[in-house]
View 1: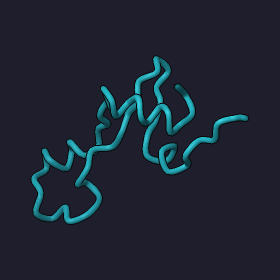
View 2: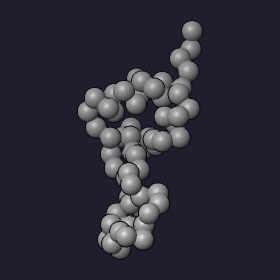
View 3: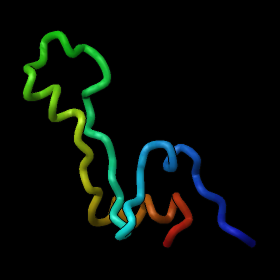
Length: 64
């Protein structure tokens, strides 16, 4: 039987061409008035997911 992907994981993570998993930086959705400009710029970048969490995400996305 074919393994299904968890749609919640597909929406939250992105797989690069080389197979790395990217995620958004947390705390950047709202309440930005009391955050500095450099902090707000930092929320635009994506972070690489590593270790056990990366393996778990790959399993959720039916990659591993």
